[in-house]
Image (cartoon, rainbow, N blue to C red; front, side, top):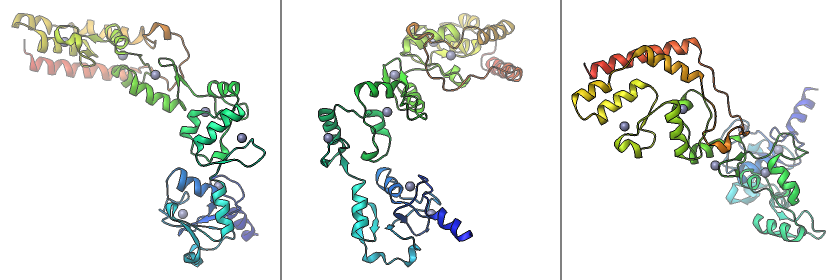
Length: 331
Ligand SMILES: [Zn+2]
Ligand SMILES: [Zn+2]
Ligand SMILES: [Zn+2]
Ligand SMILES: [Zn+2]
Ligand SMILES: [Zn+2]
Ligand SMILES: [Zn+2]
Ligand SMILES: [Zn+2]
């Protein structure tokens, strides 16, 4: 009974959960199917075992499962590029077949040397298209690729496929009108190619601005923005989270004489603290770009409301800053 269960477990691939028709084993003796092994080693360029993560410098494709050490692999056919051995010519042919770029539509077998050539053939001969984003990011074989009519491709990009509930379309960057593979890729793009407020970001907000002009408007409305002298042409470094930081900067960078410096560093603590509270609770979480207001950007995480303890910490932090400020700029 136990051995039957073990045999069943061994004949099912742990990666794709399908019956194994050809086993792929390395020195750690954890078998997977030859398709998953090929996908790992060839498409993903990873040579470790998916079960125990041991690096497998050699892998053997065999029909009947045997311990790796018992196999006489020196006699086997060998594909040097992927360090893979094949027990016989039939197994090797089966391996080569899953790598083919073959037209799934033509009645006569039509094979291309590259995926790009198959793509061109599909477009010209059958008016079928593959999704460029999926083609670029998904490491799958050509025979597994999906082909769409123009209309179905548009639906795939915006909403996903009716037969695949795990994919709900590729999210759109409304600034560039470009789609990205998933929310992670869109987020990478937003952080790399657009702007966000580093103060609000640290508080957990997820707001982006198409260009620096909109971000500086946000700095002016929600934080403190210095636009004096050379600060008018700066980016990021002329924005301040608190009034005390802002005044310290003004005193250090822009005061012409001692009297002005003294005036610049005078702060009403109570007023400043109350103002911060008001600002935090008031106008927040909107796109500065008017054309984007109210549009449905994907929600990539919610901002946590400030808890009383956080307010208390902010106040303590504020006091510490005030004391150090007085230390460096005594009245
Ligand atoms: Zn598999
Ligand atoms: Zn292993
Ligand atoms: Zn064809
Ligand atoms: Zn796609
Ligand atoms: Zn964009
Ligand atoms: Zn902000
Ligand atoms: Zn300044």
